[in-house]
Length: 397
Ligand code: RFL
Ligand code: PHB
View (cartoon, helix red, strand yellow):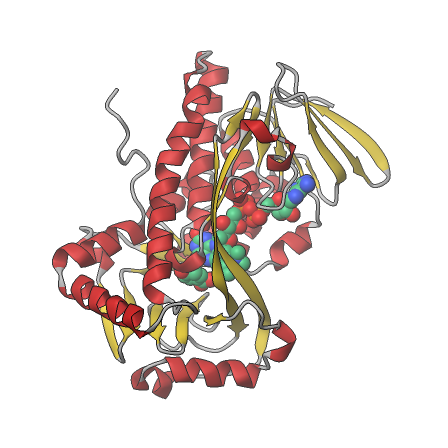
């Protein structure tokens, strides 16, 4: 079997890359470890930046997102019992974000791939990426009891944080930067109307909370919890009770509770791999970097990595230039570090850290007071939250 680009992983990175390559006339085969249904069962991101919206349009899969997604021009920040609004739209001169779940994005991309009749091997086992330091990389895997070898020009490692691609790179060729946070996010999804028409990020003495949503009838809430908490110990009633203790009166008066349709605990981590290219293997998305979800950047970064990679491959095949490929890693990392910085900073600003004393809460309150009452401070939050442009801080040619 032969293709131009072998894509490992059918998450948002792999699926979006395949669709952008298809539009550019470049062949790709996707090899995914789990079933399509399993990929769709993972409840994750909910907020898309303008850059990601544009890329989904470019990939030809934006129609349902524009019909069903919710455009948000601002969000709330609650601290010291007071709620403030960051008016992203006004502050940034008209930019918004789109609330549209990762599950829906993935669904739309999968449907487009199926409609185009493009090959994806779901439930592939023993996936190995081979010879990527030569001109003839290969991928081997087992599917439905049969062994396959896929020959290709390039391998795109879109297989997430626990994937095989990053793990296959010789240790001396890679540097990893990591910070693990001493708490997790307990998330609950419910078919109840959202408590507010915009998201609310909460810094409370009992810890961080987030009121998010998927639609006008489906809510997503998160609570900061100790890493030692187990999901079995959190009943729905306990979740709603704790959420109430972290919200303001106005939100509590509007909060409608109901049975959860999903509940899970996610650890928080900042992680970056340098570089992101190893010969003919490219890492993209969570395979190369993780952000804590506070800034809503993970899926958006995955989308922009994939855009840079697609551009580099188009340059290679159409203009016979290796400049894009050679510049891929540096270009991605410039953007990634800015989003990593913002996500780490927003996490530090909004959470309670177990080893910090009361002085840290006062520092946080003072910083929030400053930021939310200063045009420059609010603009900085807004500009980062809606997402920096694709070519932000690119060196002049
Ligand atoms: P994924 O989604 O992990 O997909 C990787 C795919 O690779 C497959 N795989 C393999 N396939 C073949 N062979 C192997 N050996 C393989 N090993 C793994 C996996 O099965 C999987 O299908 O990575 P990708 O595509 O890079 O996408 C990244 C995003 O999923 C992630 O960044 C976001 O979900 C992060 N995130 C958020 N991002 C946002 O932009 N906005 C948000 O609001 C937001 N909220 C969140 C989040 C992540 C969260 N969690 C649970 C980590 C909220 C949460 C709670
Ligand atoms: C979500 O809706 O899942 C979500 C929204 C904003 C975040 C993180 C997660 O910052």
